[in-house]
Length: 104
Image 1 (cartoon, rainbow, N blue to C red):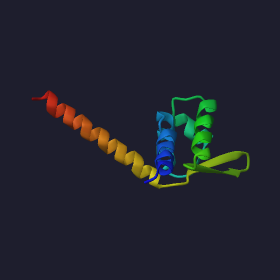
Image 2 (spheres, rainbow, N blue to C red):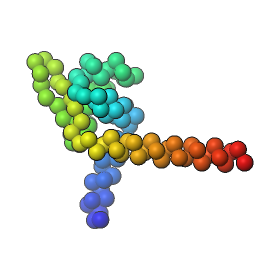
Image 3 (cartoon, rainbow, N blue to C red):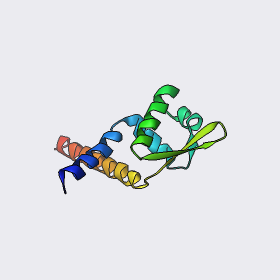
Image 4 (tube, helix red, strand yellow):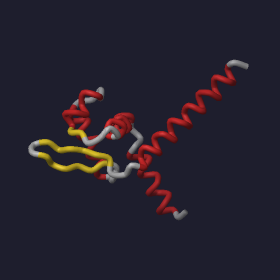
């Protein structure tokens, strides 16, 4: 793998390196949503949520379409769910290892 590939992979991780962005992606797993539907599920202001959606869109993780006055968001690359699931599995394994060490 080239340095350019490594940089591109790092950029994907950097894009997802915020809890709000991960929450947004997880919410979009259920289907397309507008900001007004995403917002009640987050502990975030509308302006912050919109900024996170813009980052996700600019980096190709989500896409948007206009429906009347609403902008509807969806996940563009479904592989992102696997990335999040793998990260969660690593964390769970680390927790179990820590518990095991503490119980000795």
